[in-house]
Picture 1 (tube, rainbow, N blue to C red):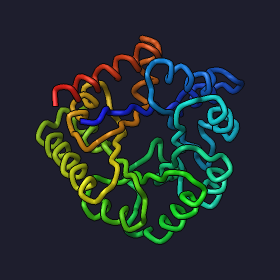
Picture 2: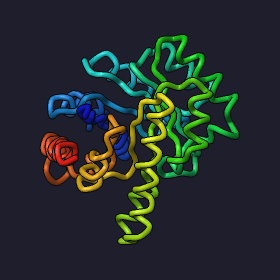
Picture 3: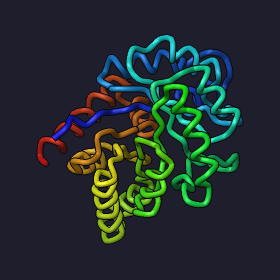
Length: 248
């Protein structure tokens, strides 16, 4: 079974910085610390309203880190142009609304098929590996393949919410939906990642799905870092993932 990679999203380091203004805490420093602790890559979401990560953050992180940068972005002309200039290792296309606190659901790869395909083609031509943040549904995966994106990231939010709400039956149904989607992605030749709302226990369980080869986790790790430090939070997450993978 392939080793499960960990991508660490450092958006909310910037959220804390922007709450007061100034330069601390520095997301670039967090990215370097995450890599030192065992992260396989860094994810940063440059939003249209720049509510956390800034253009300068993206440039600094891209220049500083020796691991892949996953540039999370909306499929807009502005963001595609920034990505093509920055040339991150990967770009993950996500839905984006100004009113949302965090990403709500997967990208509409069916209704927005042609628009997403055009953005994917531009990014691919620039040498950027494109992933699509999608719901764990067969139709979404098949649309992703027709868009010619090599990677999908399964939205784990519905499962995470059910787990945290103690809704055991719903949580199990959502987990099985994720498992089936990961299996179907593999049959379509899509590399499969997953993320949104994951904690240590959920990451451990999801690590047992062999088709998933990367988890992207941010908010939980930054929250844990307040109490135990970023290094310890990432090392504990890495251990949980390895334990889940080994048990599978």
